[in-house]
Image (cartoon, rainbow, N blue to C red):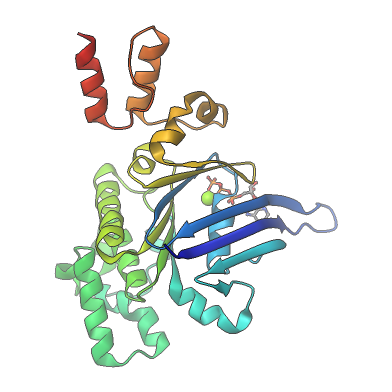
Length: 280
Ligand SMILES: Nc1ncnc2c1ncn2[C@@H]1O[C@H](COP(=O)(O)OP(=O)(O)OP(=O)(O)O)[C@@H](O)[C@H]1O
Ligand SMILES: [Mg+2]
């Protein structure tokens, strides 16, 4: 499969001033993501996840190294517009991403700025709202919606641009469990049905366990990169970095430490139940 994101030896420092030195936050990241992949990015607070995400659609540019999105170098100013259409971003706080007082106008906002003809815009807005299950709310005011609904509107705004990939920076962090579930299933459907590449930054291990691939960052470097099953089987290393593993993985690990014969790569509740049943 074709690569959509190619990151080569990416270094990035935030500039200091006369009193504070520059701080290197990304220390040589190499990462390739193929079209259609669903990748979770995990890491302790301050490990550089958001800084990395901001490089994918050129909010930040490398201090050293290179970032390519569908072959476009993010440092190529002439292609910035094209790049931003290929890679859409969704942030943590849905309230900061909503600009209009009517849902459908909000989803149409970026398309209007792009000068997309009315008929085409109408079609894309309707399709995007249906895709996130918010079509019935098209004439509502975003202020009346729940956090999960607002976040789905923000996602609709991004998919209306027909991007190749969407980078979501902790999109569920401010949501209640119901909102988290709605947003997760929306993202998973975008990936499955439309083939949109997803990069999901999250602190929730159960969300990461649902992705195809998990990239773990620590202090500006990628330290693990594999399937969730493989990554979470490194329970000790994951804990050392200050992260958790999914609850069921933790339970299986504790059982194994207590001498019970339980597999070391459990990541779903079903697998955990099966393994415990076998013990009896
Ligand atoms: N604008 C900035 N100027 C200077 N330093 C910054 C800036 N933004 C972030 N940093 C620093 O860069 C490091 C990485 O920050 P970043 O936001 O990328 O981490 P993160 O992994 O997204 O963390 P979190 O899980 O808290 O969101 C942190 O030490 C942070 O303090
Ligand atoms: Mg962050």
